[in-house]
Amino acid sequence: DIQMTQSPSSLSASVGDRVTITCRASQGISNYLAWFQQKPGKAPKSLIYAASSLQSGVPLKFSGSGSGTDFTLTISSLQPEDFATYYCQQYNSYPYSFGQGTKLEIK
Amino acid sequence: EVQLVQSGAEVKKPGESLKISCKGSGYSFTSYWIGWVRQMPGKGLEWMGIIYPADSDTRYSPSFQGQVTISADKSINTAYLQWSSLKASDTATYYCARSTDSDYWGQGTLVTVSS
Image 1 (cartoon, chains in turn purple, red):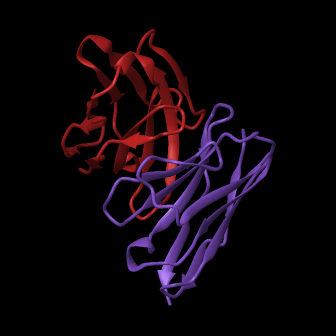
Image 2 (tube, one colour):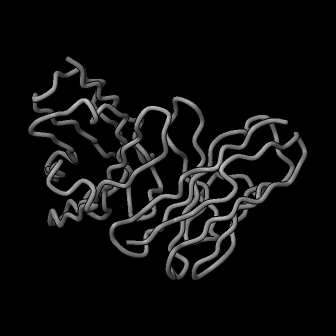
């Protein structure tokens, strides 16, 4: 099974900052990597698929990169509504798997 | 508009059975996989399994194989997640999501198992 490891587990940042979250796969997954945002009490929302493709309607401030085992999600110019928990997920091979999550908090 | 609408919250006792649902609309239901994801209280997302409604091809995470059953009725555009004997540790919110890359999600179904 493929293990997904996100870092950091939590992150404090200020409005206007640019932040980067990393996701590492235990083996190569090509670009079969998605990123999600989840706010308390809400369902996850898809941000990025195929490692770097933006879902329809997602602001351009979100960007993804990477291939193989190392991936990043970058959020530029943080706004109050961006403070949430972010998850990566590999869908290269079964069983699919999520990272443990990165909680982005306001400094 | 693509929508996945899940059944409502459930409160059950240990040992009881349960089947929750996820109804898709706004797209061709048989053309996309539907996955199920567990989120225990205060915890992260766990991938449970996935089904292709056109032919009911189903894959499970080893962690959930034998513990739950995933099914689908393509005639009514609905996927299901069921338990034959619930445990307290099944208390969680369960989400369905469309496609292998989980592009659309249901609103979640809270399942509480308590004696």
